[in-house]
Amino acid sequence: MAFLSFENIKIRGISAAVPKNIKTTASLPFFAPGEGERVAELTQVKQSRIVSEGVCASDLCQRAAEKLLADLHWDKSEIDALYFVGQARDYIAPQTASLLQSRLGLAEECIVLDLPMACQGYVYGLSVVGSMMSHGTIKKALMLVGETNSTFVSHYDKTAWPLHGDAGTATALEYVEGAAPMQFHFAGDGSTYKYVYIPAGGARMPITPKELEYVEPAPGQKYNMTNCIMEGMNVFSLAISKPPMSVKKLAERYGIEIDKIDYLLLHQANNMIDEKIVKKLKFDPSRVPMSLKRYGNTAACSIPLNIVSEIRAKITGKCVDTIMCAIGSGFAWGSAHIELDHIVCPEVIEY
Amino acid sequence: MKTLEDFIALVAEQFDNAENIEASTEFRNLDEYSSLTALSLIAMIDEEFEVTIKGDDLKKVATVEELYNMVRSRMQ
Image 1: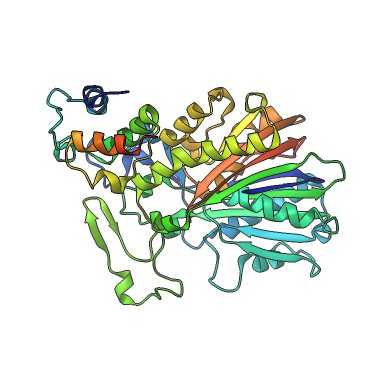
Image 2 (image 1 turned 45 degrees about the vertical axis):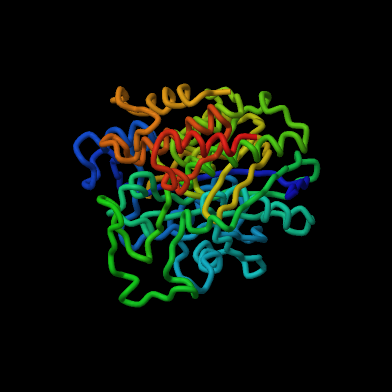
C-alpha cells in the first residue's frame, strides 16, 4: 500500500499563467457540422489556451513564479529548492529546473530537479517536494508545474486536440513547524503505458524521417510518432474507476470524512469523467471547482490552475481543507489531503 | 440481477435512435455509433454493473448479447 504522510509543510501561495491565444473547441476544422458543439457540450471544454511559437511551459512558469515571489515578499536568495514538473521541457537535456534557476535569478545553493510527470504531476510533485522539505533543512521551495500540450498533441487529431490546453503555474512551499499533515495515496499500472503515449523522441524510438510521417488510423485522427497518442476509451475506463477508489483509500487510511472536505480538486480531464468521479464519491458538486470550460485539460497544471481560476476569491484569507486527485499517463494516479491555509493567490496572469 | 432485456434497454438509452436495438444487434456497426457512444456505454456499464469495460473490450464483441455476457462474466 503506497501511503505517505508528513508534517510541518505549508503551501504559502499558488499562481498561474496562461497564453493569450484562445482555441475554441466547437470551431476546430476537423469536426463535421454539429460535432464540435456536441464534443464541447459533453466534455465541457469550451475553450483552451495555446502558446505562440517559441513560448515554452518554462516561460509561463517563470511569469507565474515572479508574480508569486513578489506577492509573497520572498527574497529569491531564500529559495532552497526549485522543482519543475511537466513533460514539455525546454530540452531533453539538461533539465528545465536548472534553466529556471538561472532565469529566475535564484542562488547557487539550491536543489534543482525535474519531475517529468503527466496529469498526475501536481499530486506526485507535492509529495516529493514536501517530503524532501519535511526533514527541516530546506525552508522555502518553489514547485513550478507547466505543460504545453500543444507541443505534443497533433493538431489534426480530433480525439485529443479539442481537450488540451497550455499553462504554467507556481506553488510556494515552506517548512513551518506545526503545519497540518499532508497525506497521500498512490497507485499505478504501467502495463497501460500506451493509453497516453509519445512513442518517438526517447531512447527507445529515436526520431528519424520515418517517425515524422503522418498516419491516419481513422478519419479526423492524424498524427505522427512524435505526437502524444491517446486511446481515449481505455483512458476513460481507468479515469472513472481509479480516482474514486484512491480517494476512498486515502480517506479510510487517515480517517478523513469526505463530506467535511471544503473542496474536491479533481484533475480537469473531461466533464464526463469528473462528473462520474463526483457521483461515485457522493460529493456535493458545488464544491468541485471546474475550470475545464475556460482552459481545458492542462495536464499537471490543471489542479493549481483550477484553484487560481475558480476559487481564489473564496479561499483568500481563509483556511480550507481539500482533497486533490489526479490520474495520468503511465498510468499512475493518486490523491492528497492538503490544507490551503491563507494562501497567497494572485489572479491568473496572461502571457 | 439485471436481465438481458434490462441490458438491451440500457444500451438503447445510449443511442438517440434506439428502436432497432436487439440482442443480436451489432452495435458497433450502427450509423450512430461513435467514440462518444462508446464512452457512454462504458460509463453505463460502470454505473449499473460496477464492471470496468475498456475500449479494447468493446472491440472484442460484436452483438449486444455478447457484450452482456462479457459484463456478466466479470461481475463479482
